[in-house]
Length: 229
Image (cartoon, rainbow, N blue to C red; front, side, top):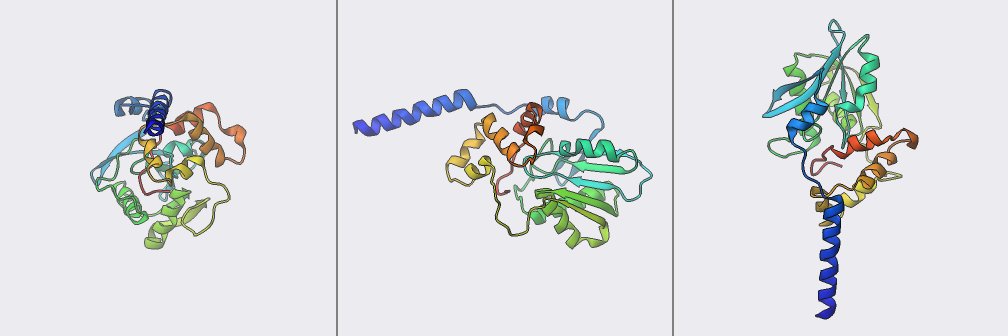
């Protein structure tokens, strides 16, 4: 009993230390919008969600470029792409459900098919009948599945390290490893250690020097819906 009490006391102390140093409170949506939804951001209601998106560039472009981001990211992933492409093309990007400033799916179902339906509804809401579709990681998975289901809506498909094809990763971000451990993965609901976020971001960069403090900090606020990896 004495040993058990010491173990329990140690666990309690460790828990307190973790909460004190790594615990966080959700940032109010109003504050996040003030920082990340400045012009040219817009919001559009789709399937019970208020979807954050940006529609920029050449409005005469009848077949716009649509960019879909990956896990733990947002439309800001494509800031540099949009800056360069919008001079000649119409460029559209959105925060997928449960990421960035778009709310979660009302039914909390995060299957690829559900995301494909979302993209279809999103494009329809903007009156887009055909597009050049590009996706990274999770976004790539959604993009190629969307193309399979709605080939008539895709003029060109660009995949950047797309997920979905069965393969073994050579290197898995530490956050993803922890997310696969029962019980322990629930800690991410209450804590967000910056060093884990930074490590995970560097894991997916070939040139680690490009991971600046601002990039790591931005990744800190992104949410990952349950069931998505």
